[in-house]
Image: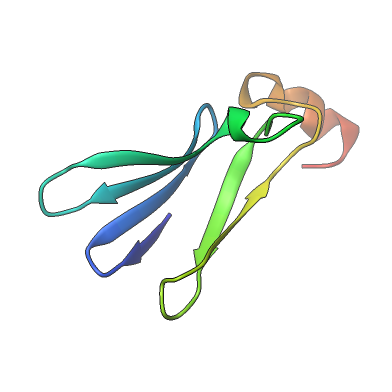
Length: 78
């Protein structure tokens, strides 16, 4: 999660990247896991540039979703 100018940006492992207006609670899906081919499996972190114009995010796995995280741990890639 990152906070920038009253907006909270959240990497949510099941559906993608959201922005949440902390004043009124409005939430918008910015990036869906299905926006990519192959689909993202585990969106897990994000960062904004200092000016807030760019959002970078990472996908924690190319293979496992959050439901299968234990396999990722056992594989040694977590």
